[in-house]
Length: 340
Image (cartoon, rainbow, N blue to C red; front, side, top):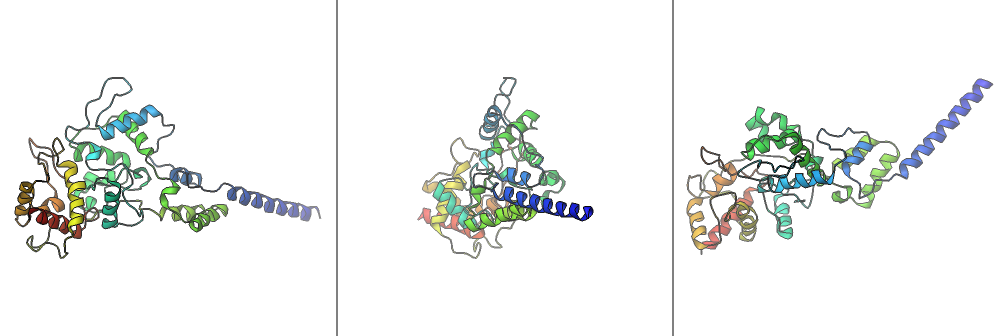
């Protein structure tokens, strides 16, 4: 009898504990203002290697200056040397959201978003939400560059070092510089509100949490954005005279020229080549479009340029995800229209 009573008591306690647990989960709702990384950690995921705990405002300020200016004043008080003589992070990367939909690659939607919000249309992926990604230098970067990007593919720290030394033609970052940059990047992390969840979707996630189905809740949240930035290298058209098989849209080409090309090709910009709005410039561009020359927009966009001895500045190419074949034809149409 005593044994049976003990079993009954244990059974009642188990039910009570389960009820209290479910009640607690239901009352700890995931809210739109929550940071995604903190939610993942609360649901059982480890923090990533690039996580920074107890970030202070001075580190964020130094990180901001390193990213936007290329140098800052270190904790010792002596102004640091520039990471690169040629580029800053903002030469190729935005610091703000640049896609209206976070879970798909849609070049036209991205361009329209850039037009609506007056942000650059760049080769590199935005640093906004970069701490929430799980891989970097993906796909064809690995296929083409192999060991050069292997460590960077799975580490944000290594990808920052690679960008500082190789992409920016600069130097190795010191530990305090890396921590400062990461501190700043954590201010650009994604929140639940950035995912544009419907009320039903948010309720479904909270229901999963309430029933301790944490992995399912995490997977549902991660399905709402790309955890990697896909990269596909592509070729120039077989005939530059014919181009890609799309009809150009000059109005979009104008946006690409102003928000993309002119971001670097302006007086005192990263490039020595200034692309202004003069007829002379457009005539020069048009003349080179169909030539088998590195000056053709097809060659420049799809292959970029390479650094040389005495001239380390170069232009990174646009992957297919960052500029579609249609958009290259849009740019061509705008150039040709501007000569008439």
